[in-house]
Length: 52
Image (tube, helix red, strand yellow):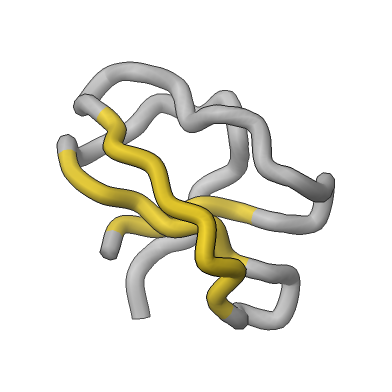
């Protein structure tokens, strides 16, 4: 399973990332992110990001 990252943390790899719910479920939200840029805020505080 891919590592989950909190909003504001530095992106490790460029590419498409998806927002993940608190129990690992998909939310349908994605973002194209570049390496070294911070992860954007999520819709809810208990969600994280992971690379697709």
